Amino acid sequence: MMNSEVKEDIFDCILRLEETHIQQGFEEGYEAGLVSGREDARHLGLKLGFETGELIGFYKGCSSLWNSPALLAQFSSQLQKHLHEFQGLLDKFPLLDPEDETKDEIKDELRVKFNIICASLGISKKQLVYKGYPNPSSNLDF
Amino acid sequence: MDGFGMGSSINQAPGGTGDPKNAVDNPTGNLENVDGSFYGSSDEEPSEAYSRNKDAENRREKFHTMGYRDGISAGQEAAAQQGYNVGYKESVLAGYTFGIVRGVSSALVFLPAELRETLIDEQETRDKFQKLHGCVHDLSTETAMKRFYGALTKKQRDEKSGEEGPDSTSLGSGSGSGCVSGSDVTAPNDDLGSYVTELSSLLDKSPKIKVRLDT
Image 1 (cartoon, helix red, strand yellow):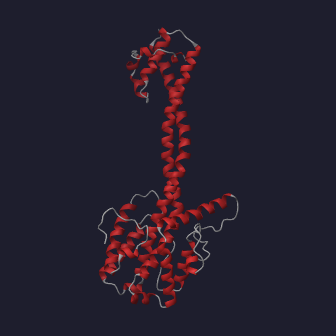
Image 2 (image 1 turned 90 degrees about the vertical axis):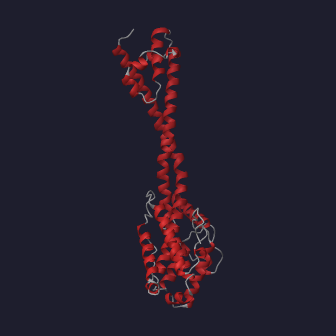
Image 3 (image 1 turned 90 degrees about the horizontal axis):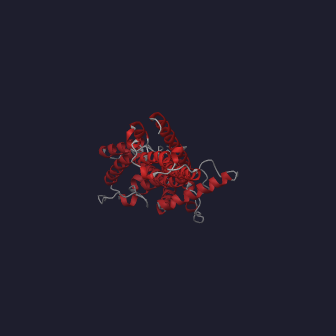
């Protein structure tokens, strides 16, 4: 029989060995996981990046045009205010940061503002938007 | 390594619960098996080198596999964010600039005629805007994205093979949109730069419209 000190030494030894095996396995798995996960994720990023860029660009294009001084002068002050706020939302949109999670929230605000502006201008939003313009789950759009 | 013998029958050996340090430090929860082996080999089983080695190998395999599984998930997770970011950054500006073409042309075309005329003096320019709008409006996001992706892939292939890429920016290589200039429909792997080029030249003729094409 061994005394307790020797026992502990051997326990430690066994545990260290197990940890080494686990760690080695982890490192090999990690490398394999990086390779298999990267390309799929990149494609998702390409898709969402393009869609987000397109949407914000679309809003930006509309906003720039509507905010032309020659037009603004003809709009009601209420509409001018909406347009100003719409542009403000666009300016704070974190377009270039893929990880910024405030995007969805701002997108929702933009969508609502956009609908209001279209209505104020008397323009059919359905005609104005493009094939692929994101549709919300609700049927509240007109 | 005497500890790697047989002895699964002695799983309840006192050492398993009698040592709080090991119980806490062992993240695998397999302490009991380890203890059992230890006592088994030292007390009951005769030492057989072959059996021990084999068992040691099995254990190595077992723990290695445990680590590997965790590693693969962790690696995929790490790559997911990284890969997503790479893809996002590759496409977001192309989408953005193309979106501006959509937005400006659409907003202009659906403006009441008298307002449109306050913005653009020349009928010819208004007509060209109308035409540009027709082209991009027909193009769905999906088609536009495929075109962008085709051009991107081609560009990256060209760069890889060491040839000169068509241009340093993915959107700057427009050679005149087929749709706008009246020639054949643009090839599927043409990028979207031609529309941007067209918008840019129309904006030059429309000083009352101020649009920045960059961010």
